[in-house]
Image (cartoon, rainbow, N blue to C red):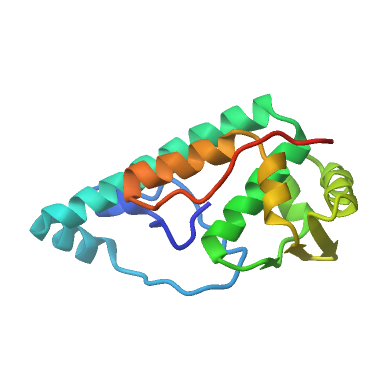
Length: 174
């Protein structure tokens, strides 16, 4: 998941010969696109740019690994809170145009499982949702519910690209 803190395809700028993944835009925003050849030339000319692209690539690997561990280890409600908090961090918006189908794909579960988990979060007044739209209504409670992977991701992001952490940790009361 990439937002205000990342680069899609950083490895192609670091002399990668082909894209290793496909990007799907789920939430509207703005970005900048650069031809890989131009990126490689700019990176070759700037040590600091090369270091930033490398750290961004490292972050993507670390986040993918953390996501795999999280999906295997934690309950769906905790993972959904982590995912919604991360989306909130990347967009800066309480309103998220996310379908349960898409969340199911991202969390590795069926849409019906996301529906049940989202219902629990809505009953606890952490979110309000309707078809294709989720609004975070209680970030502090979401932070308490999210698994420790959210803090790990925030720390990895801060360490690799310098964002300051803004979170508290806790456990979900189901």
